Image (cartoon, rainbow, N blue to C red; front, side):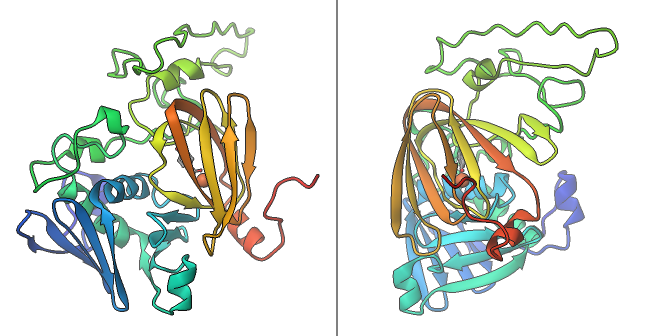
Length: 337
Ligand code: PHB
Ligand code: FE
């Protein structure tokens, strides 16, 4: 299959060849990337490479795949689970199995291949679209979506290709990402009916009209229809405010290549924090409203949200950071006490 269609991005990459096989008995196609093979059936996804194989629940795999695709492979490492994942080198991407898992490493059965970003992106996007059934939304909370399971039935292309909010300056400014309302198809979530819906009154001094802006972030987040999907809502050079609403479990285990700050805006999230390379347990961080945490650059983390909650993720997009940290020119933690 060749990536084409009306998407200009896909057209620009028309020479990217996705390796896709015939549909199996369950109706799902098989995909190949380098020496990796991917297939799914009613319940599971099977990943194979020359020295091993792995099985993952189909819903967990699709939720992780959805985020890896939508986030352009994110910052650093996206572990789908303790075995399979990707490392972003910002232009190329490693696909690995067992590389960040002590047991697979010691047995020398781990495997890693590097791909140009357009090839792995097109392969993952095609797999996500083929394997997502009608009624299943990989971004939705478990309580707000249908099932991922069963033989192939229909598709949900609108959900798996939905626009990711990335403001250039701040949401709500002219020519930037719009605010959310009933009219834009963003009703208040069932868990956030108590969130005030007023907007601030901005009175700019003469000469500053159009330069001063503000919006109600709590209202904005109360109308999010997705979970575990940070939106860039404001940008100040490399400082990105990426708030998100969370419910149930972060579908990836994120391995950092820089420090990330978390500010808990509402409710509770429990973070399991592990060593990035071995997976050894490092700590558990339970965050309540108002709590601030800095996640070091040498860990991986996965969040658990018992109720839908609001979290501000603060990212530093400076492209020099991974190199400065991996070569020891910057520390892995932001503060020494
Ligand atoms: C993270 O890995 O830091 C992360 C990812 C998605 C979220 C929140 C945090 O929704
Ligand atoms: Fe993270």
